[in-house]
Length: 447
Image 1: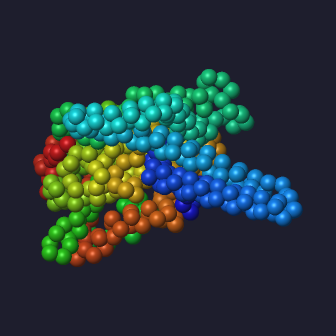
Image 2: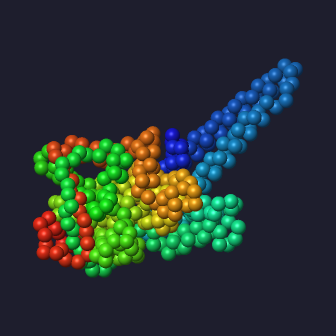
Image 3: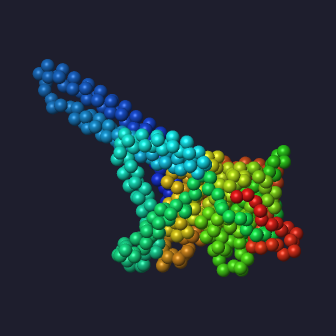
């Protein structure tokens, strides 16, 4: 069920609007106005009771002042309204600072100065807001690291017994990532560096149908030899829609593997990778062209890839769904962003808590939970990052009554009306395709 903070609990699953700001400041101010109105009504009740007491006194009946409860309620309403206004101001400053950073990234220095001026005016009226915002940021990042510390705490230990305890190390790591700013991708972020020499090879495909659940979407993320799956939807009138699924890292692969640790490091440091170029090549080989409507789905390294594809501006992206993403991208306001994270997943923790405010279209959210067990009695050191674990979380989201899931279903709902649906699964490798075999494509793409 939902509450007024923008978060939803479904068992151990939490759905939040993202970042520090998990509330709608306009709603806070509206509630505060309602409380002030209630305080005024309490004052009216108190005045009526006081007049009644004096009228009874003139008749010889004296009673103790009856308005004490009304006065207390009036004071509580006023204090709570003031607190809500303060919260709204604090969150608004966070939102303004994020908007200013986005304006800077977009090259609009004038707009950035205007936005920061508005933030400074709010802080000037209440300087304590700066301290509250700093405290909220610290608390948010500590909470982000708490489950990670629990995951790797040795059996039988209680808390972090030393500066090298699991909780302390997790907090230090998440804090360092946040300070470096690598995990949060501001609006307008682009990969740098030249295109990688990469080729893709079609491994299979065929007719299929549109997905009807988040669980089905997880099941379509490639495993095994596949690295990219592209679904092509032909609509009435010949219009085309696409869904691109990018896989996670392929550990221990051959030297020419495009989804290797090197690509992970390149992407995380915002450098063009073989996996990014291969994904763009696979989309092009399946028929996607610049400006086409493309839904993006990615897991782990594939989540980084799809995040950068969404930021590239190459496609019209109505929906971005990521699982265990080491980054969080400030995508276009037209893109509904759904990030599924495990709080005890060290790969997802590389996002450093992500962006201070939400991202994407209204209704975008981050769904998170701590996976069952620990590294010592659960599914091992990396089980909480496994795609199967994220499939379980997707199943919880499918069963969730949170209204934000309705918006997600609406974004892929159009695909069910397609006249035909074709799926193509691609492998990818560094270097030039041997003999340029039929069905192969060389990377290029935009970025």
